Length: 167
Image 1 (tube, helix red, strand yellow):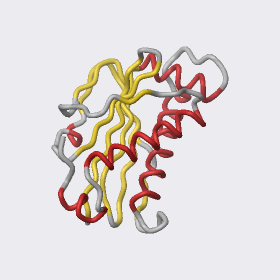
Image 2: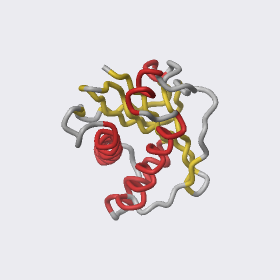
Image 3: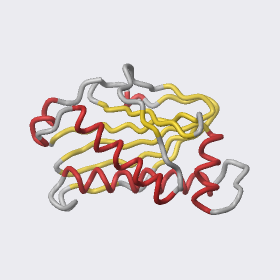
């Protein structure tokens, strides 16, 4: 993967630094809100655009930077995340899972917003969007200027991807 050159120049960050920001934010959010200590396995060599029995939570960014932050995970792991967040067993995909993944994406988007803007004032976040299903593709993540970080928790694997453009 390679990060957009304009983003690297504007932030004075290399791709590895951007990935580290995503890793630190994801570990913090999952540690405090989901009670999970994650392991990252960056870098991912190829972009992932096709998902099977998964759910993706995404927030868009607009302002001095535009882009998308997304969390992609298997449905079984989304149930575990939701159960941990709510403090009760969640056994079926539905509104609770959608809300939990949307909130995770929103919190991670907030971390990115604060890390790459002037106090978070020059980047706005969209409301979270959730996509789930037996099979789906997300083509906006196919381009080469996306940082994708795989994480694992108890042998469950999921991805956090960040695509940024400098306006």
